Length: 212
Image (cartoon, rainbow, N blue to C red; front, side, top):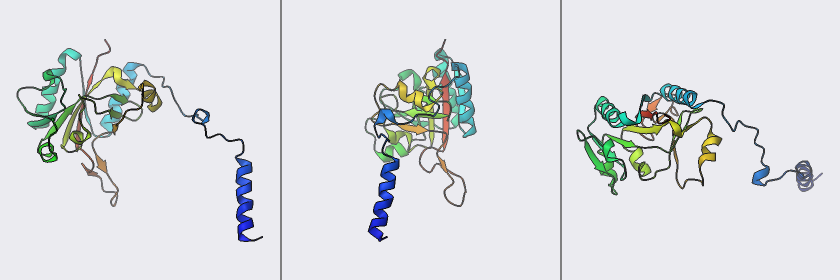
């Protein structure tokens, strides 16, 4: 058998074996877990557990206590100058700190800030992942990458258990999404863990108990 005929024989066998397969999106097999079984309190516990495993600082508060909790976390960080998205609620920006609102700040101006405060779009408890869609209260992606400290506000009702449940909540795919699972870190070089390679070295999360 020549090289060409051997290749043709192999291709013919592959085509015969996959003749009945469909590449249509609705026909793709979905045998993975698509729906969680945890109630909201259990999802919050799992989300907190995962974030702490990654080295994030996590606290909870009631909606009416959020401004004071934000001020406490910012004070605890030991930092003073923060960048804020354009539509961040004014009550979140405590007057005791210096704020730079991101009205198209330069990279140098953003990098000079010690931290950033943002809202978030979703939390995925199974992986401890926070999702940003970079709307007006979450800001441009760059302001969540350059500062060394990120304080992120996550409402309890935004937390789902699985990744498919998060996608199911999206009425349409976000134009841009950032998935944050703990402070930025890598161990690519000689298995030595280095923090802050692709984003902030320090992640602090406030989970707001807005579920009544």
